[in-house]
Image (cartoon, rainbow over all chains, first blue to last red; front, side, top):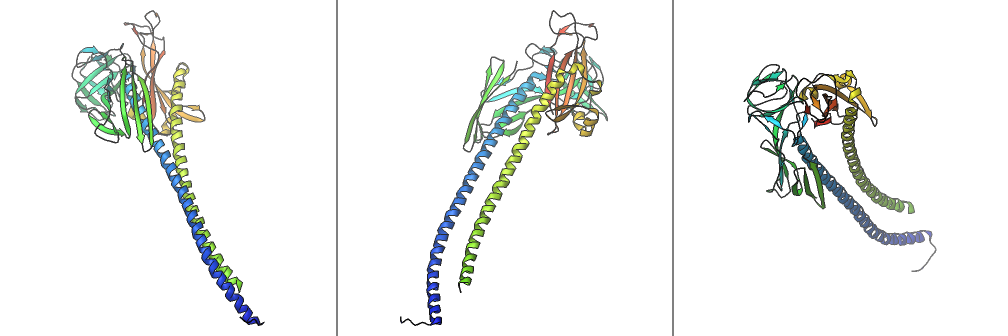
Length: 263
Length: 175
């Protein structure tokens, strides 16, 4: 190229050269930008994935903890409720009069199998006796507690406790008259507590793989806790129940142990 | 002549930076919202647990001072459903208050039975027990914690056969 000082041609040359250089640099810049961008994207994705993993792990731990806590409170509650009936603590020394059998009986202690526990206790809800009852075949009970035929009730005024079976119920506007199979053995004063007896069973459902524990109350089964394995109960010299189970939730596996006093 | 090229370049980088900032912001916002939910959940769980423990402590405190309990705290016996149906206003108006760890709990007491013939041991000459039902309204779950407690009360003479009973808590329920 023959050089001549020409302002315009020099300017054109510089622009042309700059333009060429600029095109090359832009391509490299794009490549670098793509590499850096991809790296940043991967980095962000990795952070996100790690956060998701941590989040899921924390969720699993939390879930495993709540499931275990629920099961422990259910077992303990039912075993303790079996000891404390009506307004009394019932144990081996304390007999209850069974009205339908016409004799004093021990409240049946929990029946412990390896995979289940079955026990009888009163419901938390109670009604009140609205008039004194003395050796009679019917009771005046507050309407809030819905009583049905053939149900077993426990009436207790803290001095005496009696198990009664319902023959029929007559609903009135402000009370219900409950007829029982046999006359009352004891005298109960107004405001004695009346509550329903329930048969409760807690057992691991063997048919399901996810380790569902069912709570059965009077024959009605409800799944209450999931992801439980190896639920085992052991009766210890009729004084208490030891239980253990494993919670398996994703990557979390935790063994739990508990003990509840019966006597 | 340089200015248009520079402007064009700056635009590309600005766009890329904005996209990255946008992505980062989205991820950060998502994680912050998740964290906020987790903290709220943990806080709620903590409050419920704390309430459970404190309400149990309230019951124990009341059981221990049943001898000196105010008469205004004693109400007529009610069934569990009637107690449950009562509003918080009723509890504030007719119940008594006990504050523990900065939380106030409403409670009522029902005198359910006096057993003049109850003795603690076979050697006891003096007899008499009164049974009280203590109901505490829980703050967080609006459920009621209830216990039946026996305290020594020698106000009547026994005219029947004496029998052994225990003092202290006899039953516990929550509904």
